[in-house]
Image (cartoon, rainbow, N blue to C red; front, side):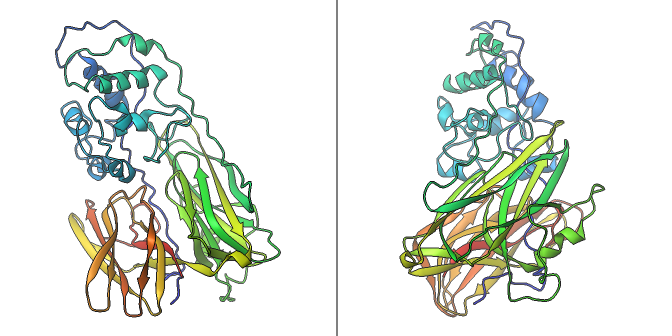
Length: 460
């Protein structure tokens, strides 16, 4: 079985949506006036202050009824809806849901997604709960505002009443927005990166950087680790299909040169995109921090004199520049330690149609021609995607669900402690549900106005 791109549109490797859904945002401070502890008016309490100074000023522009962001995130933060949609409501963010964190859990700020999304304190996040808020800036809420929200949650997150002294709002210091680069491997391995670049205000930027690995002999990669600055939806790394010798695959991009996929006027730069016709997925992440280890004795092979084409994509909705940057560590082992050489999975359906103004579910079957052991899986869809399920179908027709993702922006990577063994005739099946709220029919494509249906993973 081939694990390279499976479609007639093989030239176009996956692109991630140009629209990042904002789950929460915050900015601006209060006036620091003292609050009474007896006023319970709904318009003059602690939550009312959070609504007025944070949600109304920074969130409602996207999270209002009828807005595409609100439909996707299922979160409306106007004054008539915010409390009911925050407090005690289950999170749609995959890792937060897995950890049992609702949007706001009364009396437990440490178990409330809202608090984690607003906290920019270095070292605060042990899990990736998605983009920090407000997105696309170099500063979060003030230290006082964060503390104000934390104390409100710890006080039970009441709808009315004054439960937090506004004196904490006098702390107008910014939280640290410093970014800690990924440390290079201390054991056998190497680090490659995409150097810092700017994303202009109110824009997006997707680019490639071709890096030569510089290995004189084959490398056997046992662990892949990556880190991106906030604001990126993905980091993808590709090798090249060496069996293809016709143009453009008989050429390689200029090394260490940024290749934007769009020109200054927003049109696609076809010349910079031509190498995509020759790409073979090697590794990738759609979360800020990613760390994957192959089982003992299993490794990915990078041939001698290898190269990797890095692809990163950032969206900046803020009025100031957003810095982008990405690191990747490849940990290696001696060939004598490797019993099994793994391969990448890249299974795509590029031929589907989503009618306007309706919800559509599409099943795609990817049969296995040879015995295949699957180590891990992840999915790829765009902003209209509501649910991505991967099922294991046996030759006798029985099916088992092995992967489910409802967060298009930060899909989880499922690592199977007991690998999935597929025999010839078995298949992986993608069952994807989209809600096309637009007025046009949508199909597979590169742009944010298009959609995707792809399974990534590792197998042997």
